[in-house]
Image 1 (tube, rainbow, N blue to C red):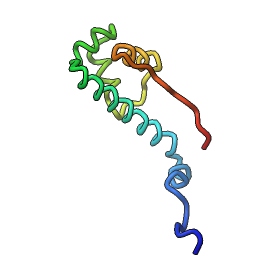
Image 2: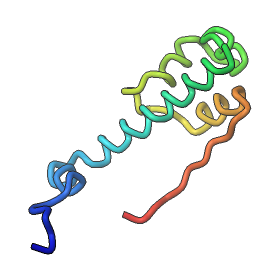
Image 3: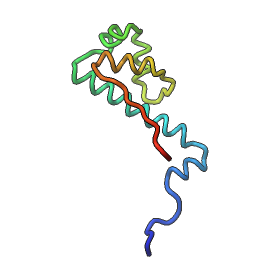
Length: 95
């Protein structure tokens, strides 16, 4: 048996269910939120200090760090990265 895997892959399942884009967005947001939190921790930066440096509210920062809230702007993301001495790298990849 050349192909030991029978059936479709998980992406095919999500596509068939009409959920691929939503699940991908949540997964990407979770990774971004986790990376920002890790960098804040490494720099011993509190949420209050981070929000102040970003010139935004703590509530806005909490939305950025909420792994399930996918309504994030690139401006907010770039601002958070800049405060942490980082930059954002986005790319399109073939499916």
